[in-house]
Image (cartoon, rainbow, N blue to C red):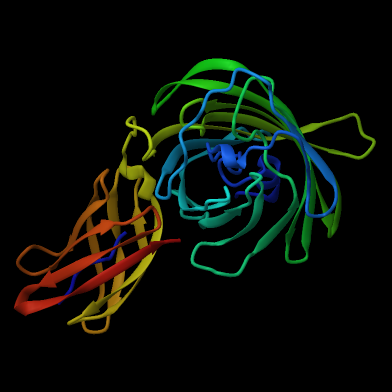
Amino acid sequence: MIKAVLAGVLTGVVLLGCGGGGGGDGVATGTSSSGTSSTDASSTGSTSSNTQASSGTVSSIPVTKGDSYTYRRTDTTISNSSTTTYDWTREFTAVNSDGSLTYNETFSNGSIDGSSFNVSADGSIASTSSIGSSAASCTYSGVNASSVAPYAVGQSWNNAWTRTCGTSVWTGTNKGSIVGQEQVTVPAGTFNAYKEVYTATTQQTSPASPTIYITSYTCWRDVVLGQRVKCEWTSASTTAGSTTQTPVFSTVYELSNYIAQASTTSVLSASRFAGAWTGSFSGTDSGTCSNLSISTSGAISGTCVGNQSGTFSVSGTVDSQGAATFSSGTTSNGAQFTGQFASSTAAGGTWSAGAGWTGNWTISHK
């Protein structure tokens, strides 16, 4: 009866070198509560510093639960010049009074699973986990943030940290500064941005590896949003005592759309929902959907398996506001699904079909 689907490698080097997730910056909260003005002592007793400039600061708007930023990213493997382009979205899911927060990162590339990040009040990532999991898959000690609010030309940092994921341990340093202020144009618009230049050095210490990764970044952070709007970096490998560096990969990403609830300049797009999804439906018929996809243009497609209807396919769309309409078959012999994306990671609604069949559906981003 139902002919419908409920629609719907980041390496350790990139993650650690960025001090964050897919975006390369870690936190970018835009709130003064996450800023530090003197030397910070990490949880391991090591010392890291983030020195604020004494003048020239511009107050950025506060980040709010539900804010999201979507970027178009291109990774290039230097050895063969092969490129991979995809979108990734960061959505803030909790903002606490002490300056700590949580955000999810999801990807249009179905081969990259989404992750959740817990960020401490000092702007450092404390732990990460897969979306939908309550157990931390990686934990951090030390300070892994780059620039922190309030941002200003002249701010500098020199931080050190450790990342532990099971038996895998990485250590790294992050040193740089905000060197100026420039206008930068990206798909989401033209922004007046702070220019950040820094270098991250990382090495796997358990199991021990002799390879050292050195990644050089140049990023632009909008002075009002407090978020990065563009970033580019190149990573090279070397070993201790060597004077030779071998280029490994380069990356560039640019802001394509965003929702900033404290701003009146948000740019909406369905691309924030892009990627692989999974879900289920219930009611007159029930079943699961494990092969769902949403394109960067908002096209929904995939397959489901119903207890009564067997395997079936659906197609449809989600618009920039998150309103979804998709169906199986035709209006007369298929099922119609409508609903709303509550976030970049979850959606739900109702379905109906002939002969009075009805029910509910939910899906979540992988």
